[in-house]
Image (cartoon, rainbow, N blue to C red; front, side, top):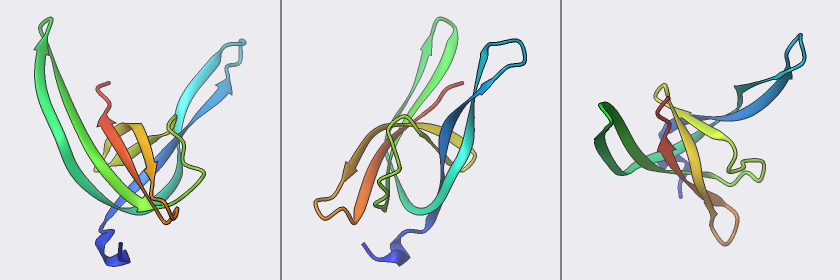
Length: 105
């Protein structure tokens, strides 16, 4: 893939655990790295369950290979947060495709 095809910008988020003053743990998502990517819509649906609406959207993101990116991380794209469902590197470890799903929070 040529660099000119990576027209989108995504931010990989990493979950951090901090200690609360009175003992418990607090989880938060912090920016890990911002990279160039190609983001393509894969599928989506809009459901109504129990009087609530849920929007499920799946995208495929192609980026240059980075071994530090793990499935436990998240992706922010266009001010929306997605969970990483799968990471598929190519055979030469030049590029990787992330399958991401919109997080309904």
